[in-house]
Length: 427
Image 1 (cartoon, helix red, strand yellow):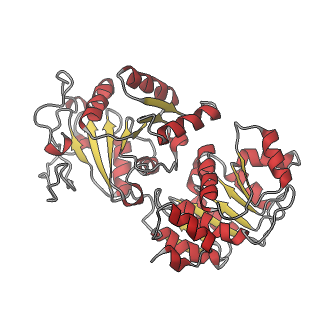
Image 2 (cartoon, rainbow, N blue to C red):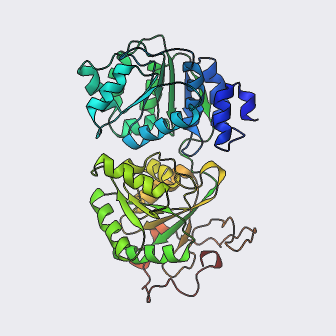
Image 3 (cartoon, rainbow, N blue to C red):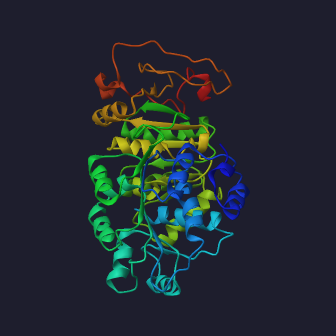
């Protein structure tokens, strides 16, 4: 199937082709026709599948024939974070360049007066985080009774961040006669209840099992103590062909510490977390996109759902405490059919989190100790770095990472090397 087959307007098709896209992704191929038929849609798709364009493209065409009124937006896209909202706004700019549509981005950390001015001019597309939207509504700066299309994006993240009461309040302010689109990477029971409450006979689209990592991402595990994580990271960054990478940590205060250490080692690294001013966060992301920064050291909230092309690696400096967060983290690489590599450091106390991740993804890791030798995980190496397409399976051992003592996980780092027995595909 080609984008030409989806019935999009010539103007929208022109913008799509200028971006170099000829064929839609599976979520786009299924969602766009349903949205064009004004059906409510529940889209269950993992990150990196082209989900954002699946609703922005048909929305641009649907809104192109009308005109917005003062303080009365015609459509509303709700996003959990400022970065995601900005990303959606960028999609409307790129694909709506040949349509005369106005948009407003309502997020915290930006001038409320400037946002009010945009609303006063009338906007076709309103992209907002729940808190700032309700703030402006309560000040009388916006009316929601002309919303014809509502998009609730990253619904599972909304749940994680405690936004569901705000979502319910916002939906109560919008006309019941509307088209509602809900997208989520996972479908916990609370989100399923939302779909039953807010959507009318929705078309359900699922392009991958819930919380499944992309098959294009190779996953590796390194067993290492907390004190040796920096040395392990440094060695992997030297041995892997790292074009650029996300480095995830669980605690915001550690993000700055690791970022500072990497910069002292000579790497082009920068932190990204929720305590940073919005202007700084936006500038940092742009530097990363421009390859001025190679390593983005970040927390989950700051990097959730960011769509940055051609990220070669993800390093989980800390094992995430939520198995779903693991899937979202490694989804920063291997996007749009490209390959990626994800590494995770496991240390004492991580066993239960590792068990939960492995249970969720139903895949075993390619595991290594600090000398680079494979441990007992029964897992296939998908491709040798030198081009060997043969699949290699290590022999299964009686024990696994969870029943080995943590003190057995560590091997002394001799100099700055993992040892001479490191597999060829890691060299």
